[in-house]
Length: 350
Image: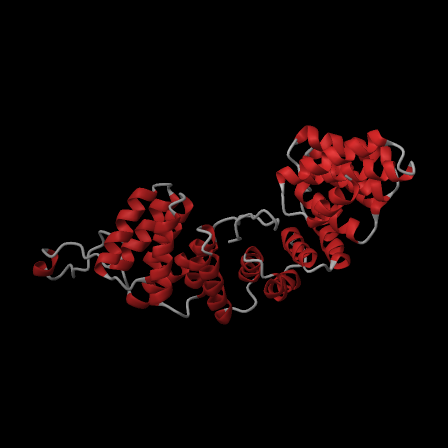
């Protein structure tokens, strides 16, 4: 299982099945250990007529096995009924709680899933799948601090689990604790170098830590391993800009805009062109950003800087350029007041 997508970290939800497989294995082990039978199977001795009157004997693990059959057939409601019967007979049957959690989670009942995972984790503190499943359910509920604790408990049991390392890194990152996230994100990449989202997550963490050379390397690795999307390329473009690779930044942003035009991408294109001293292209890109979103204050700032630059290069004779610059800088401050540098420019040149 993988963590849910976040605004900053390009991750993905996992294909389900690992815990389902674990539950099936646990159920099989119980059957082997106890000699349990399928539902409806008699335990009578055919030579004992009194015993034949007792009818079928059903034990809790039988319900779990039968619930698995209903799940395979797509009947989760009947599976839940059988799992509830198993828990009623044996409240400490961890595998029943885990299967119930999976069903709840699969249909989006995350609060019910979390309760079932929590019970399983409490019943078997050394059960990796129970601890990890609990962490993942907490992550889905955005209870990030609790998710971190659960993932850490899982990693004590299985330190080299790829998903647990990746999701723990993501949870730390979402808590704005990039330094805490870093070792787990790096380990996830070491454990599975062919996983594109793991490289992308590590790139986002490096970027947050201002390690942009490393971030570019990870974003480029991710781009080779996964289907490209605008967010990944926009992150790559930002880090290219931080390393002053502005021509590559422009090329990357043009790819972003061909896929997913946005105010943010046009604004970054304006910035890159400004750094390349192509002021006409910069103004055009900033204007396109404001067409996408009139309240995108970084684009107002960009236009303000472009026109202020024009005013200064005219030896302060181009009053129209100054007026346009001040209009955009004031518009930016109306949208976002806490911008000390913009306040300073307006006070200096107005």
